[in-house]
Length: 101
Image 1 (cartoon, rainbow, N blue to C red):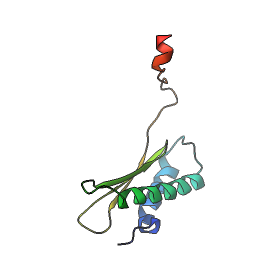
Image 2 (spheres, rainbow, N blue to C red; image 1 turned 60 degrees about the horizontal axis):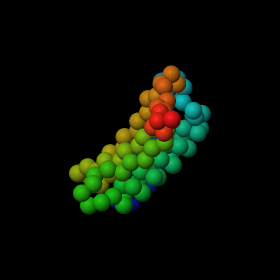
Image 3 (cartoon, rainbow, N blue to C red; image 1 turned 90 degrees about the horizontal axis):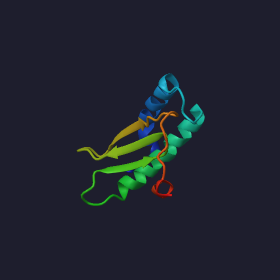
């Protein structure tokens, strides 16, 4: 089976519905989100196709979205699209060198 972004249109469409309905603050417009999802699915496909013999997943991510393609018994892998949770109130970790000084 030839894996393309178009093969996962339904998954991208469902993720965009969630984005428009539930995502309160994401550093992307709906159009930018759609473009990002398509780029990430392309990257996940490349990772999936070139994965090692004992590996079952292809993963691609940015700061707000993670896409995982998982091997199944069928030709088409499962496509999971996850919006990464973060908080603007989370304290940033300081580097070890800054602590040492």
